[in-house]
Length: 211
Picture 1 (cartoon, helix red, strand yellow):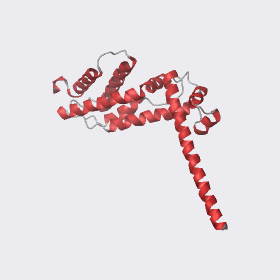
Picture 2: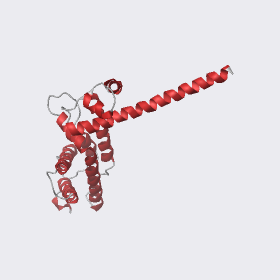
Picture 3: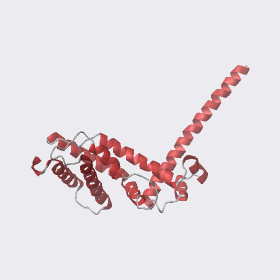
């Protein structure tokens, strides 16, 4: 009888720990989601921990169980964005000078636009946080994507054509066009913008005579 009671107590404790663990994960995710919303709305510098915990309907004490500071939460959000774009970049096959290469690039551009729509407000907040002197230490999104893209660019025009530089230029162009689209500063249809981005990228890599 005593053994059965002990076994029951151990099982109950294990269930309780699991329940607390699941609640903890849910609470942490709620804070992350609230951080995404508040940072995107207010910007990095104007956001306070108080704003985040109010949106998450939790306490300051709970916030600090999972994150050291506002900067710590923001860096983790930025890490999520970086991982998402790194995965997207890894999905792009080597850019070849043919119709298949152009089609692959266009599909990737479409995926980039969709991803940017999801994370655009936070990316703009990230840009704000990267102003000189703010001390966030967060790497540039352009560097993150361009480093991965460089390995996929196979240029053969001249020895002086540096894939790393070319990839950074391409990534900067794509990101800036998406930024203008999201802000409403560019009113052209998205499909047309993508067509121009693809054509410009292919021209940059292979020369105007590639088509």
